[in-house]
Length: 79
Image (cartoon, rainbow, N blue to C red):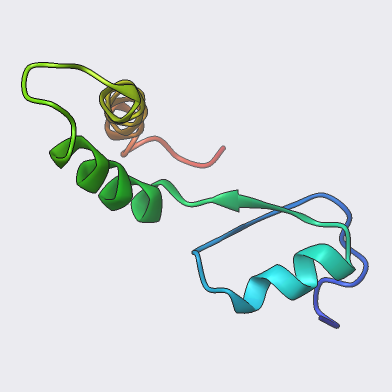
């Protein structure tokens, strides 16, 4: 709490429930990590009716595009 008490904005975390308290108390919006969201979307995709595309498919396609962009810039310096 002390580390983030002066922060007003966004913090990217995993889904650990312990982060809920500081987000509410400090008015910080938590951002979901794609590495943690993706497995849940894969689970949702598995229970979709066969041959039907759903929201999980759309979200996974967007994540895959973002991962592709990250790979393109893997060797680029921070500058």
